[in-house]
Image (cartoon, rainbow, N blue to C red):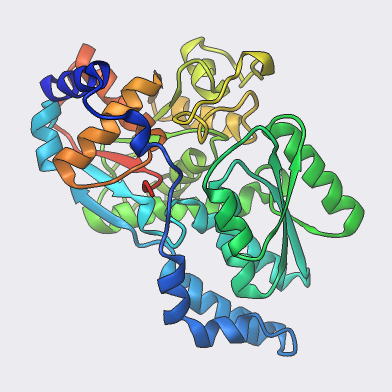
Length: 372
């Protein structure tokens, strides 16, 4: 644990500006566009049949999204005294986060069902992912962003041709406005939760399949950062599918990590609540670090809570300082440049290990975004 302490001491002493690593994720959209130009033209050509456009879009999606790297973090293992620690890095997706997985299936669903427009609310990453997917499919994209949120991803959303509207209130209010617009104007509602839950859980379930393909069994633990809980619930769903079919010998314990006292899922686990309970909106304050994580309401919170409890997992809080420290430690030990918020699952795993040393097993940490 000395490496973590040294990193935190460096922050406290001001030897490096912590905000130099806090910008939003950044993907490889421009280079990908050149490589897929033919399929892109076909998918976006509204004069062609839906079947041909879908085939082209699926070709892009299969080639560019998913199959992200899983690597053993030997240097990090030594720094934190935990063996067989693997990192599943979702920053390799086109826009730099795991959100490309659900953006692709949502846009594909919209295209298949004959919609010409999609709408959603976002704090940044999901908006970029859907804007990118919609641009490939030739769909109009209308995105609502809370007016108080400031992220470099706003510029990317506009560059991808999406229409962006700033709205008063928080993220949940932006979701409400987006859903109302979808109902009134016959737009495809790409917001998390509701009718989209099954589609999104299956999409994130692919992460479990990819981990299985590499390890040939389920690890002991999978640690995941949570906000709405969709990614965590989807990964658990994927492992449950593998276990039911006899492909794995066990279900991994699922661990949730999020910003300190600012996520209903983590609070429900820590307080032993039966269901996720909304937090008080006035108690939630975003920062440059925690913005991708915080929610007073988690749309798929009960699914995530059931996954943590059903697997004998646990949950933990992570301070801004801890997440920033782990982000820097990953860069120093493994050469990975990740968003600090992406390390919340790692923080929850290692906090447990610090107080109650974990046995020699396989541990997987999901890192959901790359730093710009």
